[in-house]
Image 1 (cartoon, rainbow, N blue to C red):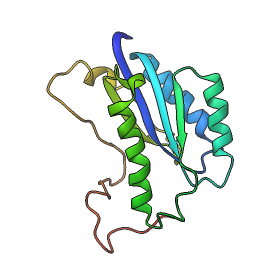
Image 2 (cartoon, rainbow, N blue to C red; image 1 turned 90 degrees about the horizontal axis):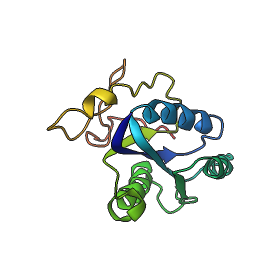
Image 3 (spheres, rainbow, N blue to C red; image 1 turned 45 degrees about the vertical axis):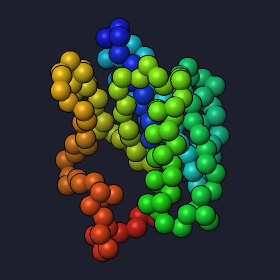
Length: 160
């Protein structure tokens, strides 16, 4: 564990009641071996299950865990990308302006809508010792590219 390093884990959650607590626990266990403080900020919207109840339960049991629920955005933002952007901006603003996150040195952004069964964050132990790097992006066995940055009509299927 590195005594001087703080990490914030953030991301979006929708309809995650069945796996969110397990995901949070797995991520915390991996990162607490590397960082002296692990904080969480989850942004939820548009859930039709009991995700919000699950977030409340996690918050009561876990120190340094917080969440923001934006309620039902779909009626105001019919475009999925607009909703994701609105949710993403909540955690970006918190990182910039909330004093609770002022000591954050690293930010890990995860997709909590899926089960990250093969997630292995141990490589961060190496990366935090390196200089002159600003970001580390997804690595997976299948094809990956940033659909938001490379979006074009017909390039993606709306997954909702």
